[in-house]
Image (cartoon, rainbow, N blue to C red; front, side, top):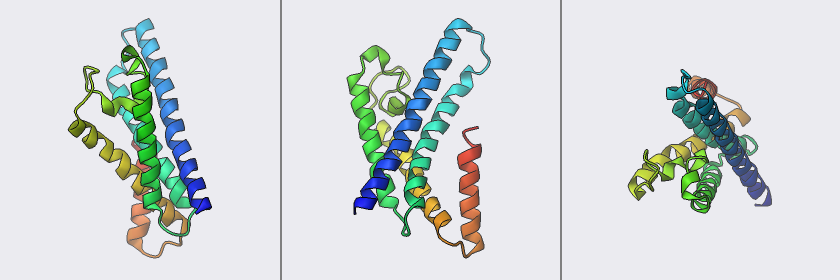
Length: 167
């Protein structure tokens, strides 16, 4: 049990750490836009931040699943839920004018930076939970010997998507 909690905390650290780095990247890009308003990359920032956020959940789940001999999908989902709870705390603690700065809390606000409805927020957190569960499962597959061609295909396509989609 102690070992499981340790790896849940490590996966949580990966999820939060990558989201903080994505937030810093977003703040830097916003400052670049203020300095040079004719940047071409502006429409693609949303996809980069979304990819980094999902990648954070996937990588945290992957770390949790990789170190165990059994699939730890529930552990990865627990780490994702704790990460999302921390995002809520950060969202509520920030002043209203700064809600957009922490990208891990984007699922709590709509496009006009108003608090989103609970249904919209639930639809936006589902990919994070799915990414962490998928990461844990693929991490488990990487830790165990792969026996079938289908498992190899799923593992490699998941890894390729995790690396290629955010880029």
